Length: 145
Image 1 (cartoon, rainbow, N blue to C red):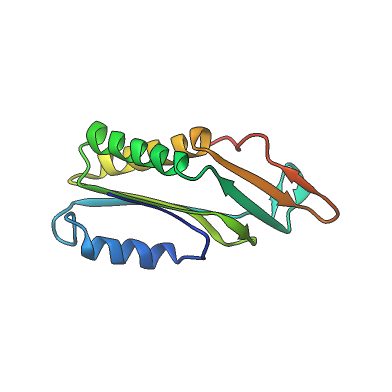
Image 2: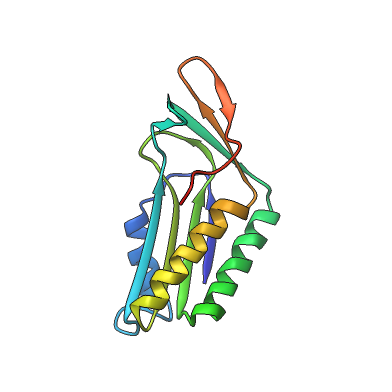
């Protein structure tokens, strides 16, 4: 299980492949890997969005993500899980979050991956400030799944 919060850009597919090679669930030992990648949109609430700044509560955010990853491991019988989340300045199209779940069978991987991203989006201590054409605003709620 690995949790990372980072300010620098990342390639979700390279990160997934690298982690899978290093993981106890590595290639050939699992039957399924489900991956969710969230990217920054160039629109929200009917407005064009030019950029976004993501903030978090250091320490608390990592504890929350570790807690949901551990819960997913137990609840869905996972072999491994990976969560990477960006903070700082982002541009439209940038990957924001990667959630990956490895399991023996696909159903557990799919369910766990959905559990991870839904909890992360609704409860993890992250805050988004969007830059519009002529103003900035804090995002008050996440979009529906």
